[in-house]
Image 1 (cartoon, helix red, strand yellow):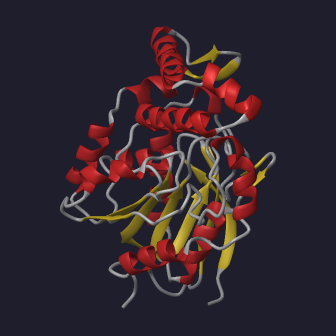
Image 2: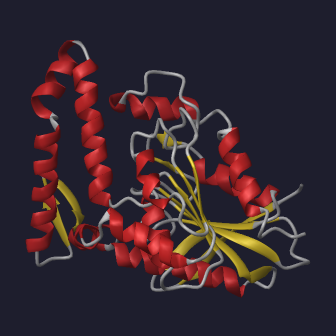
Length: 315
């Protein structure tokens, strides 16, 4: 199927640089809005020293299945205006809503068949968006039903387990400095500083970050997200791999059996939905991603998404 891409600007509370991909403008098609995870990667999933094309790969697959797809740069990054370092979680939700509303305005999109696909932090943004904007369904990749604090706690536990296996000097350093208790204490201190800060942004351990973003994330628990997903009342597909070191696949358990919610846990699949073929070391994730991103997306995940999306596709 021959598909086209256009780079566009979407005017909401800030101007968002975005890409819309489509195969046929002569009919109204369903659409998928892709919401990326934490950080400053661009709409394709690339940044300084990191070329993943993860979101571009998703967009290509969605387009090949007959969906219009939209992906965009976060505010204050790449071709989007605004200030990334003062943006809160609520601002990121507002930006995602702007993209959904833009999709609804396109003459070749069926506004009643718009799906939101969030990855990592994007699962949180998509879940919060579902309370404010009418969408037909949610795909939640690598983080469904998980708060930021619980995601960080999971990563700290993984680091501690790694420290027990790691040999040599690196293992010694991890065991001395990266225990679960120490990392959790640092996290709580960071959130506390954000809570006490009267400014939109703050510095913590030499890093400038949004106090608003931390405060707003800290106001939600994993249980809150599970309740919101259940209350959505429309189709939800939640996928987290067993080799994901950023999100715990066991957090899908509270979602299992909920009306309209389908869960899929692909074996040995990581956060960028590739099958892991190494020791899955947290200290070497960047190298792992750089190597595995050259491989296709996990076929089982693609098949599961395509089958689930069949209910929204043109018949």
